[in-house]
Image 1 (cartoon, rainbow, N blue to C red):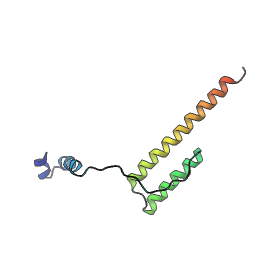
Image 2: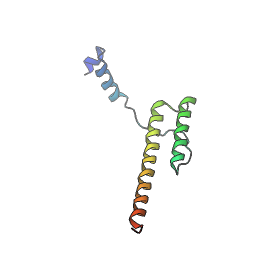
Image 3: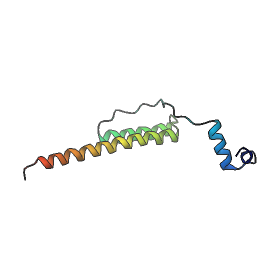
Length: 93
């Protein structure tokens, strides 16, 4: 692998570099607005977009934050569906 990397083979170079200088997750100093509703998730996503535009976030950091926001929104949706289903089951026929 090292020999191929020395010859400039792109995949070999990438694999060697990943082992020499692995990328590690690190905390991102970026404040998101509080989130409790789906509308809050929309505002948080807007904040992430502004962070990229202003140069406060890298696109990679923004994508990771967007994943967190989307997971939050999915959790809200699941909780809402569960609540609605529970209400339907309890409702008199």
